[in-house]
Length: 156
Image 1 (cartoon, rainbow, N blue to C red):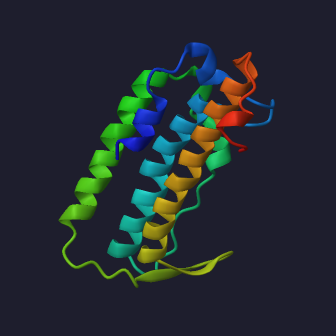
Image 2 (cartoon, helix red, strand yellow):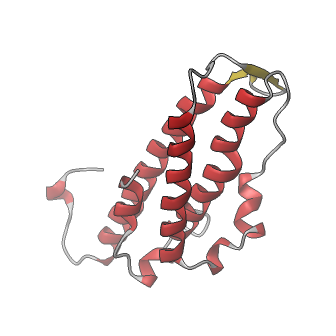
């Protein structure tokens, strides 16, 4: 659970809010999003299905969270610590489960049958997507700021 925080340490204030395009996310928005997803989406929804199967999960709106939770006003380093704390809480919760039934489910209006195992797998996949996003943002920032051609390193 250290990879994401490790990727985000020692980032300048400029790089925290740098965006390759105006409509893309910056690193600050990514870490804030990951915290909200940890608390309000994946941990909550996985737990909800395990504890209340066949009950529809409450709706979420991750895009609205960017404005509602004022991502751009947040302290970047504090958010990294908060993510670590929330991820530790999630891992501790998962470890204490006693033979959970990963097939418990509910019917989602758009996606159909969704199991607790489905959410668990997508939780991991979500991390992978954002790890890739963080790496790409860091690479693009370096390419923008570097006076050197970076093609020798490899083509993204």
